[in-house]
Length: 208
Ligand SMILES: [Zn+2]
Image (cartoon, rainbow, N blue to C red; front, side):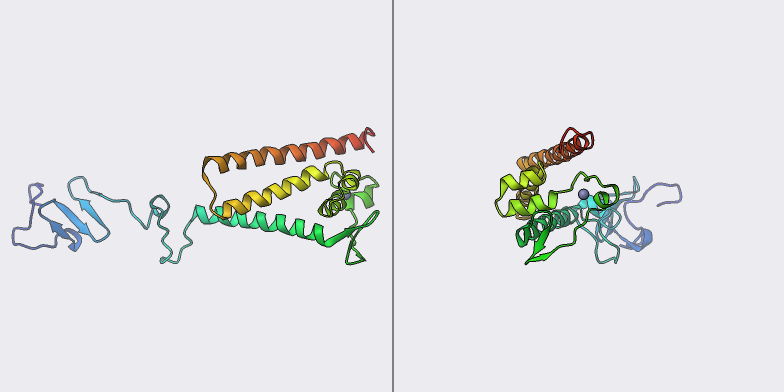
């Protein structure tokens, strides 16, 4: 920079390092700042700052000690957690045995008293669902429906969730998968709404 505010293209004494001690490339007129170049005329860097904006560049900066935000990893964790929960539900359903009014694990009764049922004397929206799941896992559909009419719908939803999450973790993606994901949300909401409607009908004395 000359005293008259004119920008000189190079050092008068042949100094290669100029502003903040950085090397000025006389051919391009840009300062070399290692990871990026700066244009001294408009005063802006030519590249995005990787440290300030790692997400947009898709390069998390883990070496700084800060927790880098990695949306893909978060999605994979969510898939894994839901898959694990579904697998646990289905696994326990297969392990447990359903008695008339209780479930048993290897012949031992499982203490599964429903809070709502024991305090208010009425069934909650999910009363009978555990027995229904256990019966379904053993292929006893008719008895499962008697325990909870929406047991099979809920059971099917859990099975499909597990398959969808497993496919996502195995790398399935694209438009088809996001459409299936959206359908899953709608199906889940529909099943929950049906359970609520059934429960309200039961409370109103319209359903046993
Ligand atoms: Zn209950």
